[in-house]
Image 1: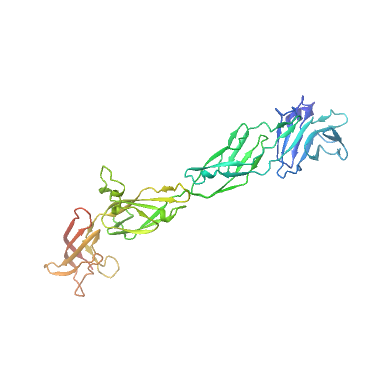
Image 2: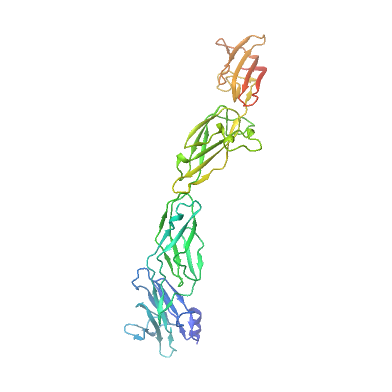
Length: 431
């Protein structure tokens, strides 16, 4: 009895542990042992080609020296199956039918499988299609299974046995299947969210025998746009204490449409006014936009004439189909620095390339003038170009080191009450 206990532990045992089911090799299969139509154990073997071939039956005995025989649909086969030096026995599966395997050895209790059924499960090729009226929807599409024909074992008087497990439907790209206790109807439609990417969808159906079957694919050409933009400030500035990523007025900004799956001519740009000008109650959309107008198209350049904090948004539109799907970017800031005049108080025109020119930092200004005078009040240099400066020479000759004085005037480009700057002070020239 010790061998029978080992068999009960190692293999699936039925009928008081005097019989053990074989196992199959070289094929994909599942085993049904409950609720089968005739109460007989049932091997469902996956048959992709439809030829009902492939796979082997393996039956194990406790040790060597056993003689094996097998039965198919009541016919016994023994020729060529004597294996006195082996502890197991294999035969190619002969097709659908009722099998049994026996092992006998002198002085030992016979080991048998009992009757078991093998059924090659074949599902013909089936497909997945897009429900046409949802092809251009902006939220998602509906998918429909076409021509799926679940395999069934026909037993007795036209009794169809499909297996006992739940059916699972798994759309490609998903991780969780839809589960049903039975096969869905032909008109069942599965909702699938979509994005801006073209996608090939398939569905894998795990049937009631636990065998998985994959459909042919269906191509989805996306009509879902993804709004994306960028911009470049063409005259940026960086001032300590004022942050970065800003420019001075007049500020030219190059806007670039980088949207995906959208027609450039249908894209909409919203360039909003200075936030200081958008007071409550909120104006209409057009009144809140620069020049009171919406802009269409792809890349363009816009000039901000005055300092302020401006915002921009892009709406990308796909015009394929009747729905005109769209997407918008988040608001992004355009910072144009307030007018600013910074005057240094020392410079060193000694030719070392560092601080050799006395320059005034002037930002967002529409006018500028600077004068240098000596200690006796005589003008020694002046300029009106904001990018200019004094190189420490008077009439082409090096000026003597010492203290000089400056007078700087400028006017800011603010839209409302632009400030006027008048700055005077001492300047030390060091060589």
